[in-house]
Amino acid sequence: MSDTGATLWFTGLSGAGKSTIARIVEAELGERGLRVEVLDGDVVRTNLSKGLGFSKEDRDTNIRRIAFVADLLSRNGVVAITAAISPYREIRDEARRTMGDRFVEVFVKASVEECARRDVKGLYEKAMRGEIKEFTGVSDPYEEPVDPEVVCDTESETPEESAAKVMAFLESRVGAAA
Amino acid sequence: MSDTGATLWFTGLSGAGKSTIARIVEAELGERGLRVEVLDGDVVRTNLSKGLGFSKEDRDTNIRRIAFVADLLSRNGVVAITAAISPYREIRDEARRTMGDRFVEVFVKASVEECARRDVKGLYEKAMRGEIKEFTGVSDPYEEPVDPEVVCDTESETPEESAAKVMAFLESRVGAAA
Image 1 (spheres, each protein chain N blue to C red):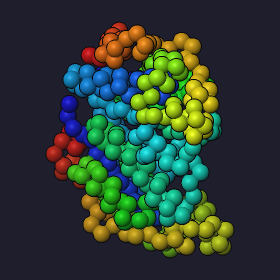
Image 2 (image 1 turned 30 degrees about the vertical axis):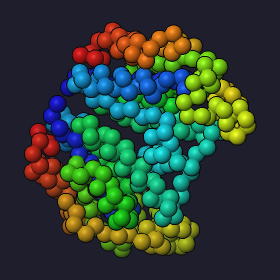
Image 3 (image 1 turned 180 degrees about the vertical axis):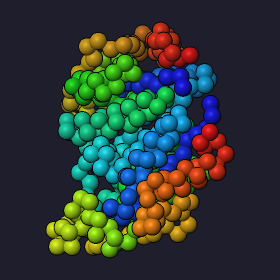
């Protein structure tokens, strides 16, 4: 069995472009015949973490569950793409320790101002009016990755350009995108 | 890619022998070069369902999470083996509908009396003294499968014999145990 398993751990603010880039990467990997699953924030909150809120403790629990599932998939040859905000460095690093070389941190970077300007889901407006508590980047912290494998700057790149950077990184890994 | 994915959904009372048989099947499948993951009750309660109790609602949530993960694995070529009690028929049938032909229900059958006699973890004694509430088979219901793919009667079979029945069923499925 060839070992194509990896976890592409997308992290970044709401609206930074995580899911958009993830979906493009998913399609590209699928075209190459690789097995791929996207675990985005909404899917996981529905299926694994219903009832959890957005306190640090609940966020950490949510992220640990995503990491548990991504580990199960990636150690079985699947490319797991996670696309939750995952604002805390400590828990991302815990996932990295669990998965070792299979873990690829992709920082999807855009400023709060830019994400608020896009405001695709209308959440920033609500957060700024105080209608959503514990909103990452507004009323809750976001800890940027220190040394991510890939940085996608979505203020200066198109989603396609960002996805190409992720693909190039995977191709640079022996056997990761045969 | 050959499609070897399946979910072996073990169900039965605590102490019936689910995990024991699951581990033997896991080893046999591993020897044949198949990818396999065991999601037993304790592993899942630690990693996916911490904080959930044993009310019907919490049990259903726990089982739905197991089914979500087993589906992700089995649709990617992995043999997922679940070994939680999963006492309610309705939720098992929901998992079956999600996974279709990949779902193999394995009824690990032993009477409450026999499981209480074995009492490997000392839980039946506590349950019968009333120290554990909502204990399946004692103070909480267990709904037997109506038409399971495999029945392992652990009162009359050794764990090895039971595991052989599961393997034989898998082999009878085209491509399921190449």
